[in-house]
Length: 234
Image (cartoon, rainbow, N blue to C red):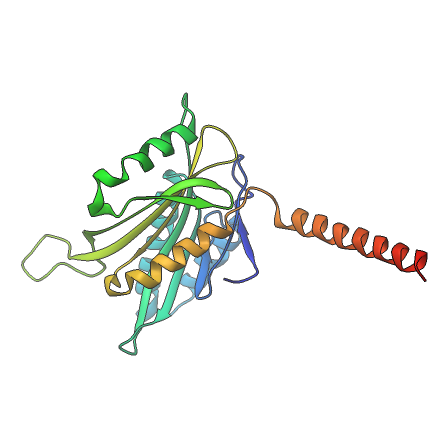
C-alpha cells in the first residue's frame, strides 16, 4: 500500500478514505472543465492519422465516467502489474456508497453474512475490519471483453473475469460501502484477493490527517510527561 490516501471529498457524506495500492492510478471522475477543454484541444491538434483513435479513447473515457457516476462510484483506480508470463495483468478497483433507505445497514450486512454458507459458489464469508463488520464475496463470471466482434458476427467478444467484493457499513446507519476489484487475470485471483483485503483494511471514515495530528499530540504529551518524571527523579 502507498502512504497516499484517496478520499471522496466531492460527494455528499459519508466521507471516506482508503489506501491506494502500488501499481494503481486513480481515475478522475469529476475532471475540471478547464482540463476537459484542454484535452479536447489536444485531440483536435493531432494529425489526422491519430485524431480518430484519440477521439475514440476520449469518448470511451467520457462514457466510463458517466457510467461510474450513475452507479454511485466515489473512486476508481486502474491497476497494471507484471504477470508470471512476462506480460502485464490489468484490474479495476472501485469504491461505492449505497444508501439503504429505511433499514439499518448493519442488519442488512449481518443478514448477508449469515447466509454465506448457502452461497459457497460466490465464496461469501463474514469479515471483520478496523472500520466495522462486513463480508467478502468473490466469483468468476463472463462479461463483455474489449475488442471488435469476430468477422461475420454482431455479438461482442466475451471473457472471464474474477470479481471480488467487500461490503461494510458506512459512517451512517443507512449506508453500505462497497469495494470491488475486477480482473481478467483469473489465475491471479489469490493475489488480487489479498490486494482487495489490503484496501479494505485501510478503509476509514476518519480523516487520516486528523488521526496523525492526534497521535502527534499524544506523543508530545507523553514526552513532556517523561521529562517531568526525569526531573523529579534527577
